[in-house]
Length: 112
Length: 108
Image (cartoon, rainbow over all chains, first blue to last red; front, side, top):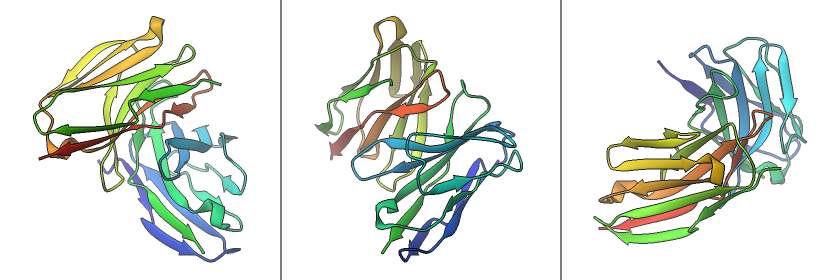
């Protein structure tokens, strides 16, 4: 099993550019989520999904969009990148909301 | 919302030492997980432990849900144990709330 796969691993964007961070899982998990981790801090929830077609906002959703057209994929879109979005982004999945969460390897994003 | 506090924030030990990391949370939670973030940034699941005690090799964890805390024990530390240890709890909205972590450095 590949588990949770994120691409790309590294990305540099210019201010104002848009991009999509990809996340895919092969465990047939219903619950998927995106977090950002800033230096010296724990993770903060951006958006999450409890199943295909259902998404909701987390703690820090501004500047990001998500969609969930399939169970496997949960892309995160940055609409107009800003330096404040420089961070490490993690995607996670779990079988349901109350079960163990598994994380991808992270995407290190720098906005200049 | 739920507050998660981890202590100590930093811990420096010699190889072979034992350590206890603590996670306090401010309200009832649906589950609790411990993670190790290695120096390369990868998050590794250690324990899924909403209550009770679990052991995995040199690591063990205990959660006392009624008293709102969890402990992670590391015995006979190795340099590969270095990194940041996070506690994360799940609230009633399925959201994982993270502590700020304990940075552990094991010296050879």
